[in-house]
Each structure stands twice: as structure tokens, then as C-alpha cells.
Image (cartoon, rainbow, N blue to C red; front, side, top):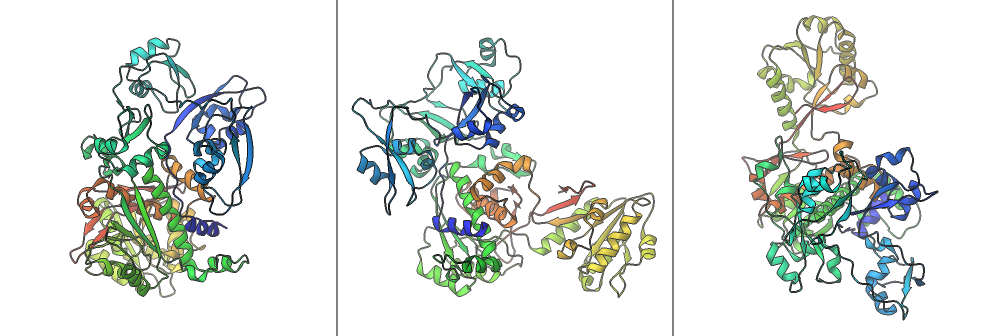
Length: 634
């Protein structure tokens, strides 16, 4: 079912505009439930609990709840308003309906709230408000940031005195003097506030955005020139501009006056969201092997779903593409304007060459994909003379000398190199033991060259490890680091089992340079690996619900499932590319400036290959703890 939904989204080419977030408070009435209140404001109950944690234990009449509002939530229609129903026909649009019934598009959306974020669908029934002679034209309601009268402010989660004082440009002392009864801020509290002497440009959302009050002589063109952004970006950040620019509107604009880049790092990780300076429209091409010619879209039988289930490459493509769409949405929310074109490469290098030959790539900023090694190299080869960067998202093999080829997944050699580097940096005082079978002889030689004093335990011909030999290699009184190199389940199972039984006597940590699929066998106990503090190199980490919960929730709301590794990789690779394009003149300039970037599961640090092209060298070192959690060691 999930793949069918994603395939449907592919044809829909969803782009969801970002809306400025606003809040109000709701006074609970007798008999109301949190579920009913959530439905009233068109939000999930989980979202309501996010802003009102105490509501989980119950609500009572007259309680004030914080409710997040977007453009999708407007005032409820007046009880006196009358409607006619309309069943949407083929090719009808909001504009054509507004002309047919002599109402504004805004009024149609007002009484059909889902249309703020969804397209009009053929066959659906909507309400059309009927104008009456007595009904006056509503005056636009605009919050005036120059208002000096006292008003109420609902305290949001994680808001403190400093943030609120910045929002209204008053001192903390002024805020506290207006609210002497409040000593500690809690979400949902209502404060008395008064705006200070604000300028036209008001910083209320931290460093990323400012707010501008529109004057009578302002034009959209003039504002784009004044703030140095494109018209597409201005419209993306302010969807209300689709109906025209009006005096008194408060527009969200990107704040380009950031401190130096060094102030936007988390450790060694660079936050490109805070370095956006290039607001030109980004032209992105995505190439994926959907193999859509094998799917009969109009077929109502189970044949198409069955073919979809059996085609692993197509499933990976659909998952990856769902993450691409999420990344495009997230970038647009930052004001980045994007034109995206998608091509089906059909797992065929010849098809890639024909796509490049038949289409205009002159303004393309970057190509993401294809997924397979042969097609990815074909795309880079076909676009090499135009110097268009091709980002290969999942290929493992190092390629030739194409200058425009960016390998976003670290090659297997880099995983090994990173693990050896990690061991080298921590080997002092350790008793190092290498266990490697015959098929892993080259890896064994590589390890022995770096660690010549390591003890060696050779597995037997029957693919097991001798317990006595293993015990003899262990040392008491200091940590034992055991490097295990094998793809044989017997070797892995016997070694991990024996080491686990010896851990009460010896301090043992298990490591490998290659956590292959054999480690996932049912014969290998995860509990044993956790007890042995198992270390291994990885392209990705396990995402954190604390840090990445917003992405997970948005993905689940959009697709109804938890994102898998390929969906997350689609998001991470695409979002990184878009942010690099928006924070530098082009991708190549960003590669030399950005440093290490990190998103949900993946991080990126590109280095230039001696033979040409770029390789992501950012590798995680992960380790199990005794509670079977995976922690990032480096």
C-alpha cells in the first residue's frame, strides 16, 4: 500500500507551500475533549499535546490551550452564512469557480480549509459561500507590529523572557513589570505585552527571518530588489502574495545579515540553513529507475501492485523519491525557490544518454541520481562537458576521472580506513587481537601492517574459532580490543559467543571494519554484540526522535509510514544539495567552503579525488551500549 501511495505522489508532483506559523489560545468549554478541539483547528491531537503537555492528563472547563494556526486555519464561518454545494468537474480550478460564482478564491478556501494545502480534486464536493446584499466586504485583518496598546501573548513551549522581549522590542524588566504575578514562564500562560518602538523590519523569528510591514508605495519587484531575493522566494515565504500585495501586510523575508560562518557550527558540523545567501531559483534534475513502462497505471487489478512489490529497484526508487519531495518542501520553507524535473532512467545507461540528448540541461544546477553505478556514470559522462554536477546517492564503487561526479555515499574503502584510523587513535594501552579468516586475508594484511604488535587468532577450516586459542590471546588487567573480519556466520557466531562468555573475566570490546550482512544472521546474538560494546563503521547513523522527530512526524503525516533508510537518504542527499546551492555560488564553490554537514541519518564532507570528481568521506563510528542502543563514537 505504501508503494502505491508514493507512486501516486510521483504523478501528482506534490509541492506544499510553507506557511508562517501563528498561535492563539482556546478556552475549553464544558464537555470538550482534546480530540474535538484538535479537529476544530484542523490539527492532530499529538500536535495539541506538543504545545500543551499538561493536557495529556485531562482538561477542564475554562482551561486555556495554546493552538498553532496556519493559513489552513481561519475563523469559523458565521452561522448566518449560506452555501451552495459544488461537485468539482474535470479541468475546473479555484479561479474558474471564483469566476463562475462571483466569489474570491480566498472565500472558497475559507470555507474549505483543506484547499489551503491541497489541490482541488476532481469529484470532490466543496461549499461555495453565497453573497448577500447585507453582507459587507470584510476588512483585511492585519496584525500591526507598530501597535503600542497592551495586548496578550500566549507563551509557547521553550519561550523565555529574552525571546519574548526581542519579539516585541521591549526590555525584560518592562515585560515583568506588566506581569508582576508571573515569576516563571510556562507554556500556555498569557502575558500582557506592549510593542516597543519598532522599525519597519522586525526581527521576531530569530536569525533566519525578519518581518516587514508593507507601505503604500511598495511593489513586489521593489521588495525583491531591496532584500536581494527572487520573486519566487518571496512568494514561497508569503503565500498570501498570490492574491496581490496590499498595504499593511506583514511579510516574512530572509535575514541575510548573519554573523560569520564559524558561528553556525555544532562542534565540527556546519549548519547551512543559517548560511543561505543565494536566493536564485534552483533548477534540480532527479534521475531514478522507476521503470514506469512496466506499470499500467489505469489497471485496477492487483497486477501492478504485485509487480511493484517484486521490483526491488523500483521500491527503492519510490522510497528515495519520497525523501526528495520532503527535502524540496523543507528547502522551500526556507525561501529557496526550486524547479524540479524528474526522469525515469529505466535502469538503462542508453536511456540516460537519450534523456540528456533530448532535453535542455543548459540551466540545470545539479542532477541527483541515478541510483545504479552504470547509469550514474552515464549521466556524469553525458553532462561532463557542461560541468553539471551529478550526485550519485547510493553507489559504493569509486569511479573514474569525471570532474563533475560527486559520490554521496562513502566508498567501502573509506569505511575501512575510518575504522582503522579510529582504532589507531585509541589503541594506546589496549591488547589488540585480530581474527580474520582466509577470504579476509587482504584485510588481515592491511591491519597487520598498521598494528604489527597485534596478536593473531586464525579460524579453523570448519569456520569456527578455537575457544582455548582465543582465551590465550586475551590479557587481564587491561582492555582487549578484538578486531573480527569475516563473512562466515560460523566464525562470527563462535567468536561472539565465546567472547561473551569470557567478558566476566576479561575487559573485551569487539570491533570490525566491515559490518556485513552476516552480522544480521539469527545465529548472531544482538545481546552478545551489545555486551561486547560492538564497534563498526557506518555510512549512516540511527536517527534521534529527540532531534529528528519533526522530520519523522512530517513524513508519517504525509505518507502514513515511518521512513526507511532509502527515504531518509533521499531527504538528506537532496536537502544537502539544495542548501549547498543556496549558500554558495554553485555546488563546486560549496564543496570547498562548507565543511561537514549533517542531517537526519547522514553526514557529508566531500574531498576532491586525485583522478577527478568528489567523494564523501564522512563516516560514522557506531557502538552498541549494554542497553542495545547505538551511539555515535565519531
